[in-house]
Length: 220
Image 1 (cartoon, rainbow, N blue to C red):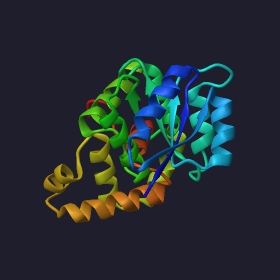
Image 2 (image 1 turned 120 degrees about the vertical axis):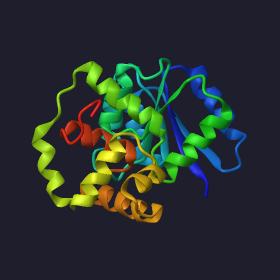
Image 3 (image 1 turned 135 degrees about the horizontal axis):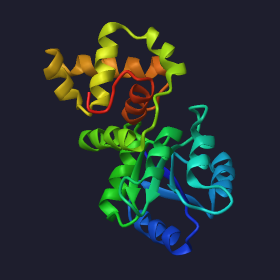
Image 4 (image 1 turned 90 degrees about the horizontal axis):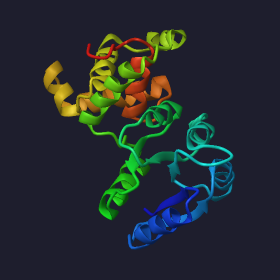
C-alpha cells in the first residue's frame, strides 16, 4: 500500500526536504505541500492524504487548530505534528486536538518513513515510555481533567476500564497481558473494543482520554 502524505510547513526548505526524503521510499507519495494550516485543511479535503505532516507554528492558522479541524469527525487523515523542541507544551495541545504522534524536524529519513507507516496503519506513534512522559507533562502543565466526558466510560466493561488505565500508564500490550495474566491477543481485542466504544483513533488518544476524564491521575 502506498502511503499518501501531505506536508504542511511554512518553511519551503522543510517542505522540500521532507519531499525529497519521502521520494526515495517506494511506498510513499507526497501528494501536496501546504504553506499554513488553512492551506493544509483545504488541500486535505481535495487530495485525501493518509497522513498529514503538520508543523505546529504557522501563520494564518496554526497546526493545532488545523489538526483539530482535520480530525474532529474521525473521517479525516491522521496527523503527525512536527516540532523543533521535544515534548513542548504545543505538542500536548496537538495530541489533545487529535494528532496521532509527533516527530522532531531533524528526524532521520528512516524514522520519518517508519512513523508514517505506523500511523497510516492505524497505530499510535508514541512508544510506551513517551506515553509515560506525556502523562507527566499533563501534570506539570496543570491541565485539569475534563470531567464532563467521564460518562463515556460507562460503556466500558470493568476489564476494558482496567486495560484503558494500563494504556494510560504507558504499558504495552505484552506488559498489560502480564499484569492481568491474560493472553496478549486478548489484550489486543480489548484495546480494539475500547477505541471503538470511545470513538478514539489510537492508544495516544486513549491515554489522553484516560487522563482528561480523571480515570488516571499523573503518577497514579
